[in-house]
Length: 202
Image (cartoon, rainbow, N blue to C red; front, side, top):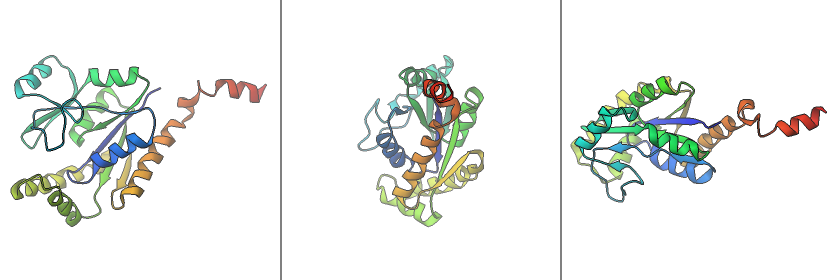
């Protein structure tokens, strides 16, 4: 049985770095690659960080009902295709979706069993410092992201788990604990331990 983890956070919280480290620390864990109409940032590669497409291509996928979720954020579209999830599930992997609260609501319509994790910054000032420290956005864009962060964070209670990214190592350890605990559920291990149970009860 494969799990679907939805990880959300306000821009600048450190979600992407945490998810990358989580994927490296645990086996059989894939990060779903979203489609987006925004331009690549420095260091981003097409089909690795995102599937970068133009607006016409994105709208064509919308007409085909290819997305299980999509959102319009900061004047750009983002979306997760059904095909992307099927590909990873078929490979026997649990899947992480890095999406906002709007996308999370849409995904739960199709996957009500998805596990939601919301990552919080330790303070608004530290969030501002992190956004400025990236050196990728103009001052007005940073202010827009801070305003958007208030809206995003207001939906934290729609998620099953909350992680505060104050100390990166601690936040990563908490994410690992959530995934490991999920994988230890009886319903997940039933087939794996069936022979052991039979031998112990014989």
